[in-house]
Image (cartoon, rainbow, N blue to C red):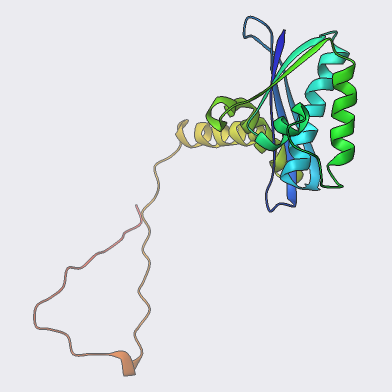
Length: 189
């Protein structure tokens, strides 16, 4: 039985939304990481979209026994039949997920705490970044590494420069105390 950790979210609810799914084999090795930006949607739409993506992946890759772990109690309980799906926008997604489940031999739905769903959460955040038009986190990390490497690789030391202080207006001048204040000079080297 493979295990699919799925997550979805939206920034603004509705807002830029996306889902992530981390799919593992029986030994706990990663089979797939799915990232899906959705544009503007709600958290619940994103959660269902992550579930549907994981179920589709399982079917496409010949897996018929799936354990689904999510931190969305609502989706888990709706899929188990414990809660009704009252929201009209979620009913088609629920029906699609139920249809995919019917094509599998066995599906187990388990609610997990957010701390146990960190990889899927990270993937869904990458999807939300993409929905916002930001580059993927991996591209941002690579760019940061390139900047750090460029700064540290034989970079010349920063130069000291002199920045003159603008004169104070006459009406803002106050008498100066007899004790001289420390003076700071910046010279160009």
